Length: 108
Image 1 (cartoon, rainbow, N blue to C red):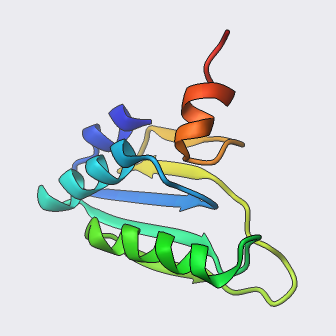
Image 2 (cartoon, helix red, strand yellow):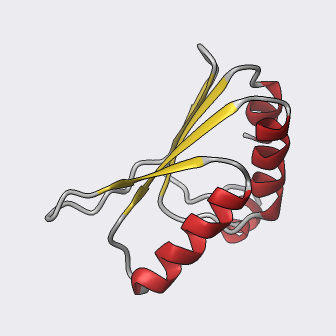
């Protein structure tokens, strides 16, 4: 996933539910700094409440990304994907968190 972000030249579309991995934030910041337009779609409802969502929103905005909220009043938005330019794309079921990258998605 980090390689896809690094390879982006014009635009990144990112959708996530949770993210606390510093490497993801670092790469998004670097992408924005080199002129890549970064847009992120996040849920407006999640377990843990508005504080967690607000913290994620602020962290994403600090990278230079434009953040959009999925605001359906009934459905919790849970999609996770990343598209750079006209491709490649990453579609995943895991959250972009340290735990998922280090334990869940890593083969034993």
